[in-house]
Amino acid sequence: MKKKSLGLNAFFNGMRSVLSLIFPLITFPYISRVLSVSGIGIYNFSNTYVSYFILIAGLGIATYAVREGAKYRNQKEKIEEFTSQVFSINIIATIVAYLLLFLSLVIFKNLNNYVTCILIFSLQILFTTLGTEWIYTIYEDYAYITIRSIAFKILSIILLFILVRKPSDYLWYATITVLAAVGSNILNFIHARSFINIRLTLNTKWRYHLKPIMIIFASAVAITIFTASDTTILGILKNDYAVGIYSTSAKIYQITEGLLSAILTVTIPRLAMLWGQKKTKRI
Image (cartoon, rainbow, N blue to C red; front, top):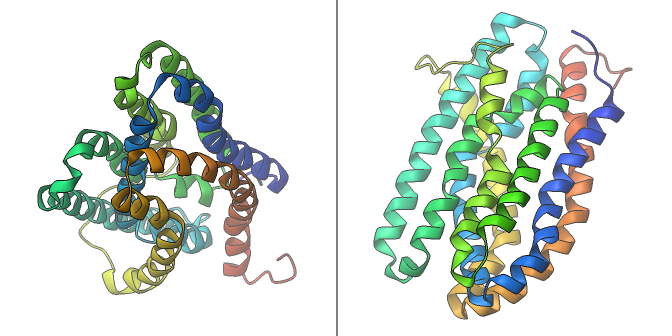
């Protein structure tokens, strides 16, 4: 397998991460003029609410898969067995996440005002799972997913100016945001199958995989509560207007955080592979 440049990978992954954060900042001046503050509040609350269920669907699978899968990436039989088992766990977690989401919408009547927007954002749960971006990270192949991600974001910006024209169009804005964020994931899943045979399997080493996955998941839960609970609590205690004002300022901080995270992410698979091969000097 041709060795990928860490610098080039960092560039591609950094570009993709930054674009994901800049997209709402580019569009916000237009959105703030067209949509009402309350509409933006419903949008942000719904997005944050769904993020908890995306976390449940994801468990700690992406981080675990990259860390462990990179050790087998030059062993076709082992990597296909590993990815199929991890993907199967991911699918089951996704089903559980959707069941919990629908149950919460039935139980908590005060969410009635957000139901439609929440359901739109919930598409991210399925598409994130199908995107299997951790496979591309294992193989250090960032060019494919970056180029398609950029294409979908450009398409989303065009659709934004065409479809979002009045205060009641915040649902269109939510739909376009989902398209920009995970619209390319179906193509990613199809393309991934061209170089690795990933499939659903019942023959999964649950005990072997679940312990490290749940440890990573516990850490992710703590981080999510720290970073997302502010918007959720604000929406519960105050109103959509307060959420609309507050959530806008928080996006600026996220850009810097995303840049640092992008650089760190691209080094993990290379280090994991070298560690699995006991090449400590290379590390």
